[in-house]
Image (cartoon, rainbow, N blue to C red):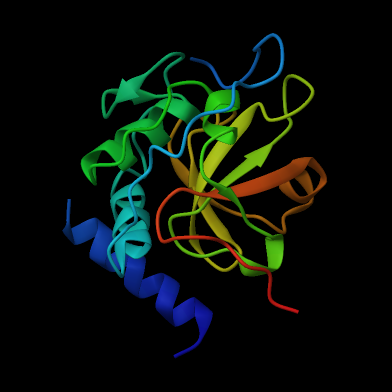
Length: 170
């Protein structure tokens, strides 16, 4: 099955399942390895939960389906799966293991520089080149392509907080 067909399947499953991203002063704190190993398939389950929230409104400092900002969306989705993440983008960027762009998997976090230097926006990888996030531009949680010029130019890295260590494929 090709990527478009798999993505369409994820969107269908999600639809059936029914802080502003930005300014933080100073470097992110280092967090202890407080993230338990994930069960097989947990990244896909996290991605499906994120997809189910598409269309939820953007709200500065929002942390629930009545309105999300980017890090609030991430924190909410991961908490539904028993993974507690910090609230802010930079703190989330300090969590988990770094993962190479060519090794992204469902459930990984992707980070961008938007309103401040360094990580100031976050989303959740759904599959290959797709991620779900809560941008303020259009006012709703939505699916976007990592390879879109806007996001590709602002990409700063990715982290894996479920599923074990990330390894780059050569």
